[in-house]
Length: 210
Image 1 (cartoon, rainbow, N blue to C red):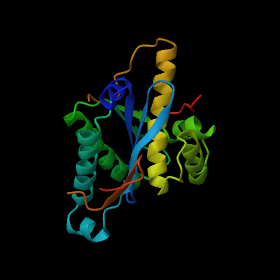
Image 2 (tube, rainbow, N blue to C red):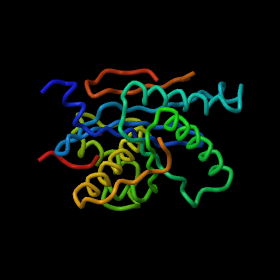
Image 3 (tube, helix red, strand yellow):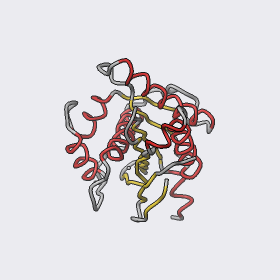
């Protein structure tokens, strides 16, 4: 089977773990219905100096990052972590701004967005909603049969977001449930990522192989 044919039958998801202040993680996974694999992952950290220069610099960087990933990898869907209700108001507002530019980028590229609560994401990959970051990293590595631990933890969280949507999509198809519409129709400062072939790049749905 040619690479182009394989890509047509595979389902690809971009997962995004937005952050109010720290790195914004991103991860892309795809599945052919039986096996799933990691395509690309990494995290974007905007330098504090750049943040101070402009109030919107970080948001601009996140928008450029997500737009580039959507353009370069053509995912079928984008999955993003929702806002944790226990956050203080200031942090929640900052996080909402980051999520906003993610949704904007998805809408501009015609990609549907699906939002998942942090506990649902952890439960989908680790088995329980209170799993810590290290446990999530270990389970993501195992489920995607990765040769090394996905670093940083923000990138592993983003892969977990993508895997969570993969699980939900599998469940929907297995039981012939109607497709959901999601929540949208859908200058990088410094982003270091990794592709499936192990190469570094500037800037995997949960079903173990059988």
